[in-house]
Length: 223
Image (cartoon, rainbow, N blue to C red):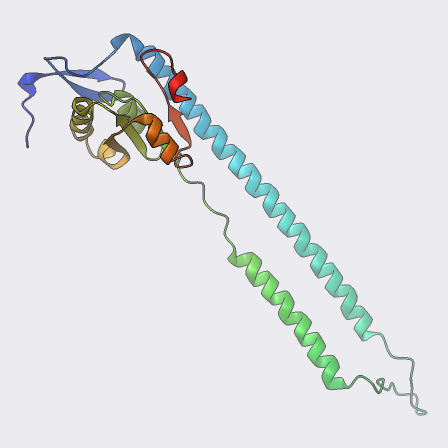
């Protein structure tokens, strides 16, 4: 269903645009543009730092795996040297004779077994791939028009899904309209739900990497 723009005022902030009803049904605080700008700067810094820490973790893990592999190889080399040491028992003709309790077949099998084990360890270590860092998921707990969520989606590189909540049906309707109005990037990254932020956060304690709280008043009831 097409939107009749005659009933709305288009407000542009950053790279996002929202439709504000001329009846002014949904809360919008124009003065908070600096607050939203600051939130975007902080999120960008967070994503960069998060990526850096993940890469450092993978680097340390790779070094530890390499060191462990080198130690295993060194131990195997020592075992091979020991296995090649001539036994003390000799025949009268001066030729080396294997100890009676160990047959040549058994010795060969032991060596092959060692090689196979080592190859499996190498295959396992090569087969394991470190989990890629998922884009951070963001919860905008009190979204109203959805402007903040839309700016996050359109202006922050590397951001994941942004969930915009509100317990006011008119606000959720406006937010969904604004998501569509902002095109494919917003549609693919931002989703809007009618919900009480406190209940939603309790039901999804580990779903998000970032929680954005911008209440009109004290945030204590949400913390």
